Length: 269
View 1 (spheres, helix red, strand yellow):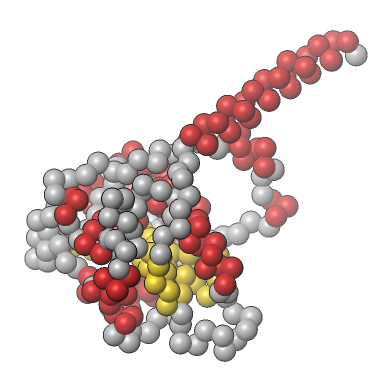
View 2 (view 1 turned 135 degrees about the vertical axis):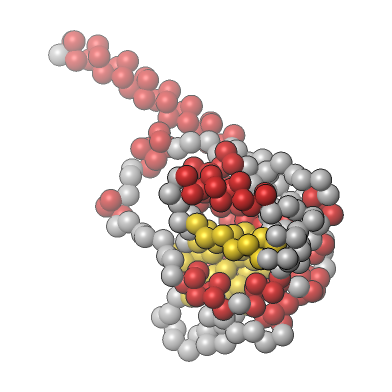
C-alpha cells in the first residue's frame, strides 16, 4: 500500500501540472470577445415548420465595407444579391468589421453566433463561412482557429499561412481566385491549395480565367450553396465525446495572428 501511494502522488502531481500548463497555453491563444454589428437575412420559408432548424452562412466582407455603416455591406457580395431578391435556404449573417481591425483581430464569431442562435432555429451541424478579399483572408483565419465549428468554407481571392494547413485540412474548402487579380495574386490561393492537397484534404479550386479582384458574382451562383449543403458536421453522441479534462490535455495552441499581408492589403476590397 505504501508503495502504491508513493507512485500515485507523483502521477497526480504531473497530471495536475499538465492540466494547468495546457489550460494556460490554450488561454494564451484566445482572443478578446467582442460583438460586431451585422446584417441578418432569414429565408422566405423560415417559421413555416416550427421544428425545422436552418443552415447558417457567415459572410465576411472586404476592406472597403469596414466601419459603422451597415448599408455599405450591400454594395457587393452576398448581401448585395440578397437585397436584390436572391433566395437561398440559409440564415445569413453578415457582420461588419471595424476600420482598424481585420477578421482575425478579435473573437467576434462566438458572440455573434451565440446571439443569433439564441433567437433563431440554427442547425449547428451546418454552419458555413465564406468571404472575399479581406473576407477571404478572414475565412481562412477564422476556420484555422476553430475548424470544428464549420461544415465547409469558401475563401475567395484571399490567402493564408501554409502553417495552418493541418488545421484547415479538417474543413471542406472551395477556393475561388481570378487569374488576373492584381490586388492579391492567385499564387496566394495556389500555395494553400497545394498544401491542403498534400494532406488529402477535401479541396476544390476554381481559377476564374482573366478575372481580376472583383469576383463577387460568385455569390450569385447557386452551385456554391448546393455544394455547401452537401456538407454537415458529424456530431458524436455525448457518451463518445472525450471527457473535458482529456480534451484539455490534447488541446493545442492555435495562433491567433492573421496571415502575413501582401502589398496593398489594407486597401483592397
